[in-house]
Length: 200
Image (cartoon, rainbow, N blue to C red; front, side, top):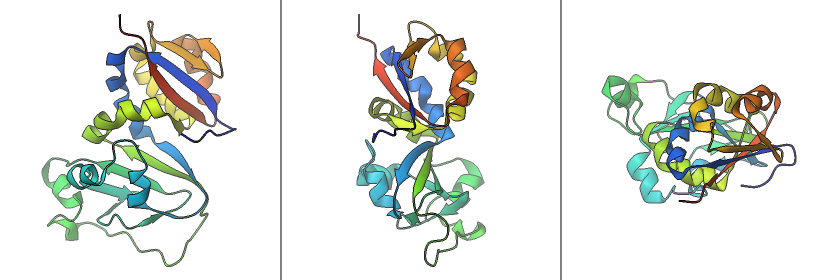
């Protein structure tokens, strides 16, 4: 992860088996700084585990700024939100599935003529269901940026993951879970990274 001078570093030292429990954190949205428009597919290929085959086989539903999309060729700019899901069940899954036969039943994203709004800033990436489960360990190990409020909202729901033997270090200071909950929400930007505790 490219460091950000404005981000408060949050290091989670966790039992190896706890990593999977953080998958739903990825629904809150990781932030990736961009200085110019980037095409979706090359952007995804920079992420750990996102090979061309994995994307083709697993990424079945794409939302850009809340609208389902079929093409991986769309450009993303600062302020874009990209959400990825594996196949969803039922009629909704069929309607929103990328290049599915029921795609005509949903709204189509408009193609941008030129770039509207800022080209620099952050792309927000949200991962759901099996994609989040598949990629959480690699992403946590690499590290990513996230709003402090998103970390707080996840931690409130999953406090058990943040209890000893987990060690929580924010800005170089070790904190108990309740202390983390009091302060992390006030951090505009947090650089989240996890380290596995040594196996006994």
